[in-house]
Image (cartoon, rainbow, N blue to C red; front, side, top):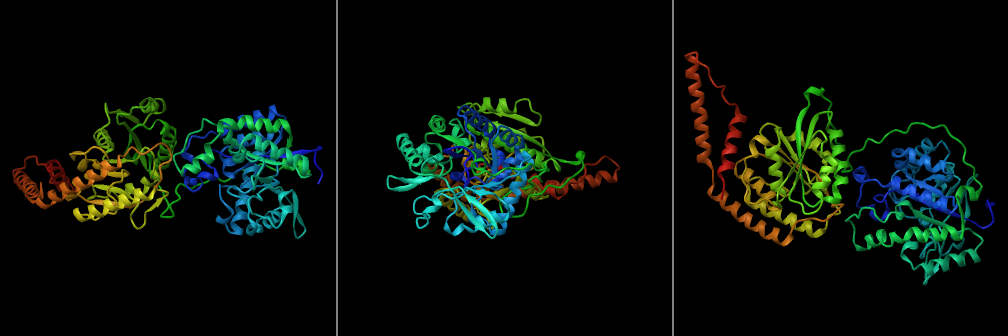
Length: 606
């Protein structure tokens, strides 16, 4: 191993966006990546500028997904003179994969990066976490696949304490192949083995302590310093995700505003180059090939989401209501989501969105107008004051000019692509299709336990009161038959109205179908629900619904009266037909049901 120049050190950069990081990996699923506002290009440009200013060359470890989605950006990094290596296709840890899956993931990422740059990939780093002593089989796989080096070891805390040589650049042999291992540099600081020039540690530790540790390494060790950071660490203005605990947020956000200065000082004090250049491994040219595009849309583990193709003029018209209240920071996330929803549903449905600003006190209305104003297929309404989520949905129902109307949360806690599976369930005779995470085939991911306890408890109580035994009564993710539900009158417009809406349909003998869905934790912003007030409200609503069902307000007498009028009308038409006079076509069963439901929901006020 011959360094390219005396006392050169190795600099590595993770080319990934702020929502693809290890701190948020268990909260943000890969099927949600498309929703986020990407800041990758801006942060990569900022990184390239810093490296140019400090005359540093680096190895950029790139996800295959990033290379597939942003090939021009990855090519730009290579053309700036930096090495491009891989860190898998998705952000996955070694223990999420079998050896066969690991090798397939490496090859897929390698192909995507080589297609973008036209240069052979020789380096690898694990995307999530570090290799432990039990994971060293991965080095054999990388050697077998022809990689020149790996940089996935972090001998910190007690890892590899019995193998001190693993702290330094060293060869790994497998059969006749040699793979260089390039571990990140660690040293004992405050009694704990930890990285001396790593991104999070560079941000969290006092600057004087980091500088002293790096200087001691450079003075006492022959092996190079192996430093690393992520391009998102140069972006203090990035959106703040509301997921994870306070420790997670400290880990990700603390001292982002200081990172550029601290990193710049390190790069000016020492000479840094790429791993391949330091090791003397040449990267040959390869022929660029097209990479197959991903076709995943859901990560629920249930029935795949599919949309049938129909003739353009035969598509079904559908309205989707999105109630918004103080969602200024979520608008870019919402915009990306709605664009994908329209694209995904377009083979079978002509989609129109109705955005209802429910009296927001921040800049939500301005953001909605800036993002969606003037765009075809978007209708925007605004309440003068905050009336509540169900009131906003009712406003959208009244505005909709389609028989099929859907509603979804602005924070997209349910995958809206599931509408492709929900809309077909609105069969004749069905008045409402509602998403249900507590259905036996549904799922809940990363939602706080206290919220689940309250939601499941409320569902248990509503099942004791109402006729239809649903698993979930409080989901806003629904599909409605407008002609039978738009005239429902509610006492509650807020979160309580969501459950009251189901109760009114149930009392009127309407039909509700549940669809199993996955409920995710909210990614941006905070929930607006007032927990104590909502609990008390549910208890009051349950009491009213119980009395309404007991006394059957708008019950059999109304139904009998409507049916009698239908029969009388039919008899009258028969008499007119005998006299050869114009007749009104007799109503079918669905017309009778609709008339009954409309009358009962309109007269079942308590």
